Amino acid sequence: PPIIVWFRQDLRVADNPALAHAVQTGAPVIPLFVFDEEGEGKWAPGGASRWWLHYSLEALSDRIAALGSSLIVLAGDSQSILLELCERTGANQVYWNRRYEPAAIDRDTRLKKALADAGLRPRSFNGALLHSPLQIANKSGKPFRVFTPFWKHLRSIAVREILPEPKKLESHGFETLGSEIESLELLPKLDWADGFGSVWTPGEAGAKALFEGFVERGIARYAEGRDFPNEDAVSRLSPHLHFGEISPVQIWRMLSLEEHEPFLRQLVWREFSAHLLYHFPDTTEEPLNSAFSRFPWEFKGDWAEAWRRGRTGYPIVDAGMRELWKTGTMHNRVRMVAASFLVKHLLQPWQVGAAWFWDTLLDADLANNTMGWQWVAGCGADAAPYFRIFNPIGQGERFDPSGEYTRRWVPELAGLPDKFLFKPWEAPADVLEAAGVVLGVNYPLPIVSHPEARVRALEAYARMKENE
Ligand code: FAD
Image (cartoon, rainbow, N blue to C red; front, side, top):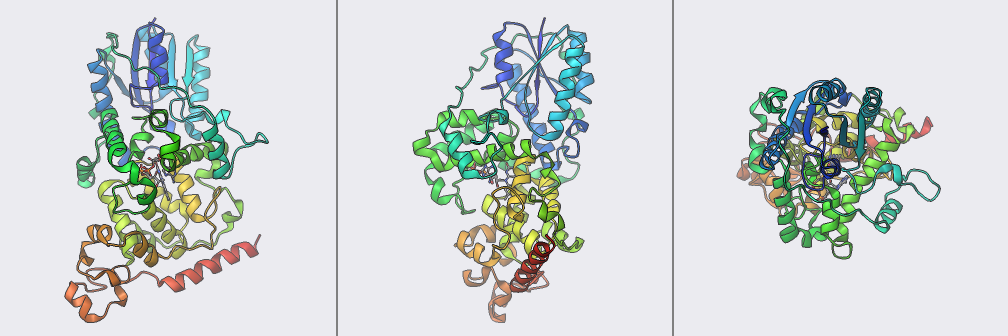
């Protein structure tokens, strides 16, 4: 009987444990993708992720067709679809690669039982991470909460070998059971995502080309360049990794720890966030450090909206937020600065920012996003201490010294000299006039004053501590 290989966030053919094991049995394989929005709980894919998924499914479907088979695409409840498909095709086994987010774990656990109860054999594998979170613990057998010991542990254990990629997949004859990818209606109705296609190539081939180009051109400069948004020194692999178009095992085994340690260390932050979410599943909504559940946030919708639109009056923050809107990504350094600005300068809850990122980031990933926001807000594992408040002027001057990144995304300030680029409100009237900048008219005045906001944030923190 055939084996159903259920694709999820592993939209690749190479180094895919579920697929490789199914092919190895010699049984016919039925590749399946189910768009199961409800199965994602509160975290159904946001707008940007849906765009990516559409094109990634097209790429996977083409890849599987080129190998001789076809991907069946369906939408609805995973469990009912799998049970029905087994019945219609005579398949008696279902293979998949595990996901480690809380809603996915709940769903898959129920589903495994339902399949077994129906006399079918489910088998799951780890295809998403270097090591399954079930196998990683600190010396006292507890989850890690600090990155450095986690990293030391991970770098000391062997990573499995890359699995062989099938040369051919037999046709299964059930093509007509699937729907068109278009019928999932993943593409946005608004023209907002139109620019994404010029920046990104979703799919396994796009991931491979990007990785190879990065190894050739960027990786040597990674350690010095990774903090500078205008340097082409980071890999931009995050959406490909999120959708499993390239596996961390492929990356790890193709690089050497001696030579590429700074990059591999960063890749392990992804493992760390998956580890944290696996062990602390409530952190998608609740701070890991429970003292922060009493943090005196100010709920100001218009401030949050100015932040989302890149109209805070702080050029480095606005540049990042506009880059996000236009390209579906934001450089990591600027993510930290923009996120910190929302949480500390504007005192808006980190969950508000996490929700916006969830909807607009092409690499939106529940584990990484949750950890990123809790890190910035000071309430997560191994987080930045709350009282260390990023100065959005200094951060701009330091990490975008030529101002090119900021001028690209905030073109109305392009004519300002470097000296005032990150604090236009300090520029003399004649300088502003020469640059064509009219503050409050074509570029906003700062929404809050940095020194005042800093004091207010520290006071809010002190109030939270008093109530401990
Ligand atoms: P590179 O520097 O080339 O790193 C290679 C890979 O390592 C990345 O693709 C990513 O998979 C992993 N990685 C690198 N840095 C981190 C990190 N700090 N945390 C976790 N994994 C990391 N990353 C996401 O993938 N999805 C998110 O939703 C997400 N939300 C974030 C929210 C906030 C507030 C912050 C501060 C960071 C967030 N990050 C998120 C982490 C980081 O910004 C991105 O992974 C990184 O910018 C992606 O660019 P890159 O692929 O060029 O990274």
